[in-house]
Amino acid sequence: MRLLLLPLAFLIALPASGQAGPRFEDGQAQVVPAFEDAEAWIQEELWVETEFDSDGDGMMDRVHTAVVRPQQTETEGLKVPVIYETSPYFAGTAGDSPGLFWNVQHEIGETPPARTMGPDVPLRLRPGISSSHVSTWVPRGFAVVHSSSPGTGLSEGCPTVGGINESLAPKAVVDWLNGRARGFTAARGGEEVTADWSTGKVGMTGTSYNGTLPLAAATTGVEGLEAIIPIAPNTSYYHYYRSNGLVRSPGGYLGEDIDVLYDFIHSRDSDLRATCDASVRDGEMGPNLDRLTGDYNEFWAGRDYLNVVENVQAATLMAHAFNDWNVMPEHSTRISEALKARGVPVQEYFHQGGHGGPPPLAQMNRWFTRYLYDVENGVENDPKAWIVREGDERDNPTPYAAYPNPDASPVMLYPRAGQVVNDMNGVGALAPEASGGQGMATVVDNVSFGGQALSAAEWTQHRLLFVTPELAAPLHLSGTSTIRLRVASNKPAVNLSVWLVSLPWTEGRGARGGIVTRGWADPQNYVSSVEGTLTSSMPLTPGEYVDMQFYLQPDDQILAAGQQLGLLVFSSDREFTLWPQPGTELMVDLDALALELPVVGGAAALQAAMGQN
Image (cartoon, rainbow, N blue to C red; front, side, top):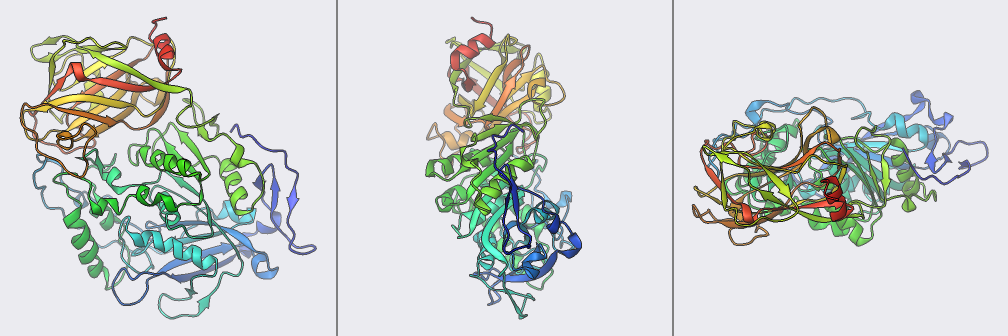
């Protein structure tokens, strides 16, 4: 990894003569031999009392918490900061039973077939809740804390999947580590437990749902949460289950919705399970998740962390993958941009793989060392963006001044229609100049065909495809692409899917060909506004055009010379959208179709890549 490191000498913190303390070199906490003996570590489990009663039993919920810390915190009075991970998964899940998911085979806007409610999750318990991070951070002079989310494992309360108790539960643990909340040896009653070994400085991390919760805790503004490293975090459940007004599943989990995830994680073994199911899943989620319109409402707004990001003070190292089609990269970039605008310390790490993938340990170490041990290692002066380039290992990112690349600027590309033979659309061209006078093209919806097959077809009525010439030089895209369309349908509702692809399509990612980025939208939400009014939608008038403009997923990718960049427009996406019966017609005004690309080097670089110099 190409980190800019300051040549710091060894710093050894000794609480008293001859006693062990943390050690730092090159701005990173080092393994201390005195902290390495796992048999000597202090391990304890407790229940931290929160400030909410989400299961309505008249008592404040307590969350199950576990601590692992160096023995010197007990024998020598050493105080240490904390690495903390919380999760709804630690005590087991329902698994991927097909019966949990919604049936997506129905018309858009039609009441979907009833979903089978999930079975009780078998409770899986293990000492210490989890072993993640322990062997990495305890030998380096940190304590490691884990907790189970409300309504999971031995934690009290109800799971709410983004509800306020999921933010307040880790807040309570941070408060306990700072002496502001109480901990007990039992879920009810028990002796009080204090964290007098803690410095009060806490850093949180985790991946996916576990990466969401550090941000959730940070949005409470809790004092003592100094740094977070969210990895592939879900920062808005609306953006996870919807896209520009369209009902859209997360990649790999067709038919999942927020109530499915509730059933997946609800592992609390209690006579209050039925109470939680009735109040949260059936009483709140059921009436408000709205699979009929896909519109944004107060329910979804309450589970969108961008709406409370102004409370975040914790220094944030955000990690995500540009090919994560489960929790898509917009989840991280939308929060990072908001935090940068507020002056919160932010660094971003991106790689070219799929879901998950933490930053290199050295990068995480510098982040936690700076903000939990107050070591002046200069991390705030490091490059703000670290991107793993195509073909590189994940622990060897390339530094950039920022993301998006400051040298990127928007460049327009326009379609030139291919031939149409027997209602079959051929392959058109993408060019820097608009043609005009091209008229309308028709796509016939058929979910039987996936995007890869559609991008490979020479002739088909089920998509439009426009491609550049073979690239004469590499083309570096960095940022968010925008698609502009004017569309109509012969029915009141139609799916709209847009992919950017690198052709020819080959196995692998990045420069080898395949998906560059993609996006989805519901034309019904654009009837009254080209920007899209996500809080309301109106059925389309068959044959009447609406103007649309929406973002594709953020990306930073270098397309290799010899590839072609393709714009693929089709209707239902079998990996993500509902599956209506084939036959709906989507009409596209080719003269209003335009693609705005964020190109490093701008128009000159695009011209060079397209061999137009």
